[in-house]
Image 1 (cartoon, rainbow, N blue to C red):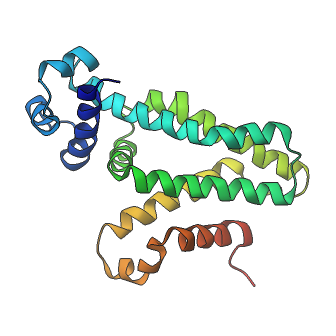
Image 2: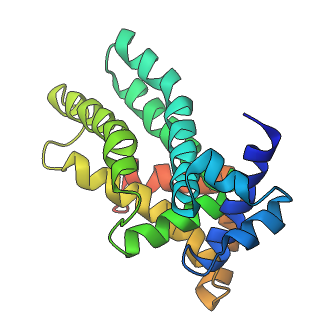
Length: 204
């Protein structure tokens, strides 16, 4: 990837997160990236193409970071220990990606709120297959009586992932509730709490 293209992607993540697609001009992007404005069309076909490329690059990075788990899943028998390891890996990966790319996660959150007008293909082609692999693994654990049969795998994944990303959104709001939960900005504490909630539950 050329330096100019990389700079444009970084500037786009920052500006699209802060201003949104409509309020970000190509001049803003060129100024922030210190790249020639003509390179936006050359590399991406325009502002919308750049926006989509920011999201696609992020999705492909998430896909790449999940690959080691999928490879291990292929050759490992499903046990309670492996299921816990799998959930732990996924939660840790979500935390790491959110901390590494907060602007892009903000853009994706806005996309979801608006019905995914420009990211539906990315969700269907990249994110959904990742979720589907988790669902298949979850259902395997159910078949082996490791996980309760009355828990819906897809709903479990949505609640866990959206709850985690919702936590970071709440932390950005600077409310009283945010102050009550500040300790969980520590990655390890947050991961352990999420695992405790979703694996052990809340009832004694």
